[in-house]
Amino acid sequence: MNICVFCSAADLDDRYTVPARQFAELIGKGGHTLVWGGSDVGLMKVMADGVQEAGGRLVGISVDFLKGKARPNADEMVITADLAERKAQLLARADAIVIMVGGSGTLDEATEILELKKHGLHTKPVVLLNAAGFYDGLKQQFQRMEDEGFLPLPLTELVFFAEEPVGALAYLEEQAGLTG
Image (cartoon, rainbow, N blue to C red; front, side):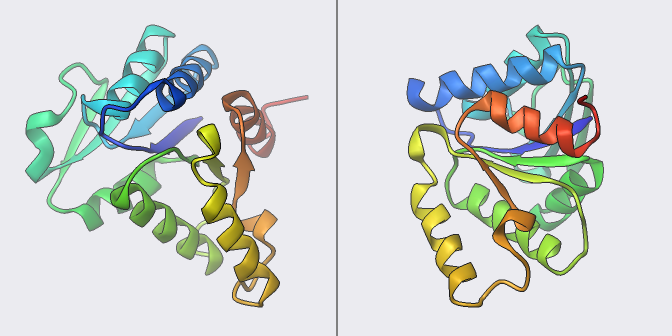
């Protein structure tokens, strides 16, 4: 399975790097491919290192203005002209999407992916990995959107909230028919 992970390129503390390492190891040991923003810095590097060390493949989708930070030893690296093309390529290459901790760029990617799914433009499973409760506020906001009629489909059909890396991968494998 090609698992697209949206996450931060910032250097973060153990509350976020430990779950990222665990998830990366699960991806690699499961024989899956990480499709990610291609950067060799911050949480993106933690993910790429973990997947590669556990035997998984790396497909990076970087963007021209960040190509100097692209991971040199990825199995495949695509450089796009702009962020819109990068997001389109990440989605096109993915069988599933996982949103990990991040800043405004990650939030932008997450909301676009969810908006496309809401309108039926993709049916790929989306997981929000809520490491250290990072997305508790966003989860509450999505619940309010559903409760007050802003979402045309149930929240559970739009996104799966996972508190632990093992739960995130188990959900994705179940959705892909890789379990049982």
